[in-house]
Image (cartoon, rainbow, N blue to C red):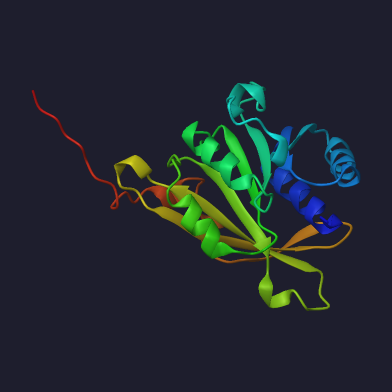
Length: 210
């Protein structure tokens, strides 16, 4: 069952990225979905929810499940749903990891190794706007409020030999009422949005002559 702290984490992240159109891919019970909808709508967000395990993969995700023309759509994705891997594979095939969509991918199992192995083969743009967030294992048995670690994820160009990059960004503390920044985990916040992606040394230049 998803806790209220996770719902507040979604709100915190979407507000930080100025999201007005939110699409929630999940596998939760109806009460949790209603609770999140109320939280987001109270903050002037349009909300659309889809059950990951019931998605039809023979149709395009973009255009069937993602139908809005807003220039910047927030997409939450529960990484631990049974059918999640297949849906993410489809997402990669459709090249949806671009700057048009802000992705917040939540991993309740904190399985960074699985995430890295899976995403290193995905077709991600250098301007991809993907946040990977998971519970801080060091504080799982702590009396403190829930702690979450957030990473910035991108690839300079998978088809051109680019490698997956996961940069630690921040630690966020969430209670049942709200979330707040605890600390930055890198200098990422000191740079412009894509400044840390200027280095393209892992890419291969393809040149053809006639």
